[in-house]
Structure formats: structure tokens, C-alpha cells
Image (cartoon, rainbow, N blue to C red):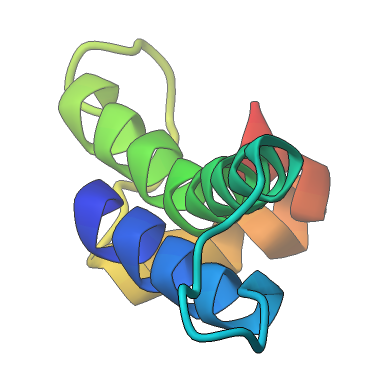
Length: 90
């Protein structure tokens, strides 16, 4: 999934930043900008899923009376509700 998000955003940004001349070559700065934005978009989109994955893997290990997560969407909404959006990016 990381690659799909990255390359989709990267290609979209490349097409937006490409010169209207016939070569469609990007400058070094435009390439760096497209790659940086694509990396940021990938992190923003996939980090909550990694948090949920880690919580799933550790929910049987942690002691206490915590209610186990029932599914991915339920975990995402529960973390966002209990810990706020910042909890999805820990």
C-alpha cells in the first residue's frame, strides 16, 4: 500500500509540475518537491494503519481489562475517539 500511495501522488505531482514545453522534464527542485510531498502523503495515509496493526499484535500481550479491538475500522474510530487524532500518529 505504501508504494501505491507514494507513486500515485508522485505521478500526479509530476504531471502538475511538468513544464508545458514538449520535453515534460522536471527540474531538480520540482523532482524533490514531488518526492517530498509524495513521502508526506504516504506517511499521513498509512501511519494510522501501522498503529492499528501494532495494537492488534499487542492486544493479547498487554495486561489489564482493556476491551479488544474488533476490527480495523472499529480500532481506528476507537483510537481517534479515546486518544484523539494524534493517537493515530504515535
